[in-house]
Image 1: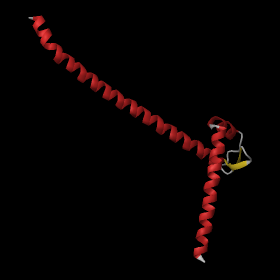
Image 2 (image 1 turned 90 degrees about the vertical axis):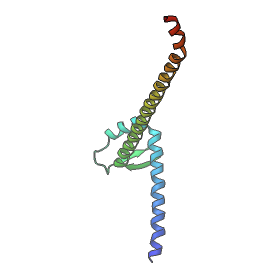
Image 3 (image 1 turned 180 degrees about the vertical axis):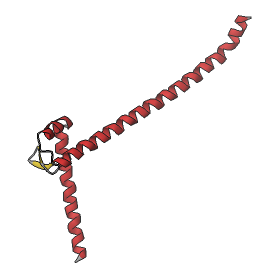
Image 4 (image 1 turned 90 degrees about the horizontal axis):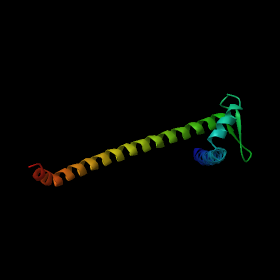
Length: 116
């Protein structure tokens, strides 16, 4: 009997994942700003219903969590961009220093003879 219970839970888990994908797509189609505005018009209870395009309904808490996940992704992307810019700057400065030293080494014999 326990073997029969596991496939049912896997099926319901698959349905739940599919439902979340539908909710995510609907929230994405609305846009982050629209979701924030519409959340202001719904009751503050996280279990309150939140209407989505396409006659879908999710909980307010799910929409809030979706916004938090998106904000976290945005902040992680921004941090990565800043880190990339920092390292590109460091490498560029190092190459510029090496180039300046190479120019000085190349020009030094001419400058030394000119000074004498």
